[in-house]
Each structure stands twice: as C-alpha cells, then as structure tokens.
Length: 136
Image (cartoon, rainbow, N blue to C red; front, top):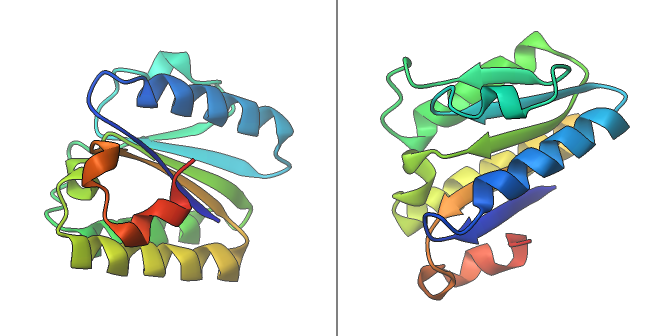
C-alpha cells in the first residue's frame, strides 16, 4: 500500500503522520521506520520505531531517494511500515517523476508486503490526477 497525506505547510501533516507511526509501532509484528529530513520530531516518536534522518545525505532526485529506501529495506527483512515525512524531493517533484516514484514504491510494497505513508506539501487543488487514489 502507498498512501499520501496532502496539505499545505502548517496543515498538520506531520502531527498526523507521527500519530499514525506511533500507532503502527504498537500494532506491528515487525519494524516500523520513520524517515525525516531532520531530527526535529525525533522525540515525538515511539522509541521502538527506527528513525532515519536524511538531511546529511545528498539526495537530489527521487531516483536516488528510491535507492536510499531500497537500502533501508535491505537492512531489515521484517519492515512492515515506512513513513516518509518532510521531503522536498517529493513535494517539489515534477509530476512524471512523482508518478514513476509512486509506481516503484507500489512494486516494493507488493513485493515485500510493506505499507508506505508519505507526506506531500501541496494544496489539494494542485495534486495531479494520478495521485488522488493514494490520498488519505
């Protein structure tokens, strides 16, 4: 499953995602991963979650970010959920790149039985049609 939380800056996306991640960590029999661009919300997360801060890595496009996610998955065979918050790579991606990224995540989700939840700082009016089925 691939799902997106959409909204403009300050609309509560991160707060909602943190609550979802904390709930998932209690319910999951495997590992839950939370990926963020900085450590600002690290202490809001349950200590059982695996927190990954990506600010120091030089990812400049969604292809490199996809590779990063594959690396995360290769380290934990029992990952059940991955939450990805606050990445400008996603929010500012061109529509065709974002669609390819989503398709790649869908394949990973099916192959490894993982749920992805991502935030995207866009207004609902600016969301391309292909993204609408993934919005929660």
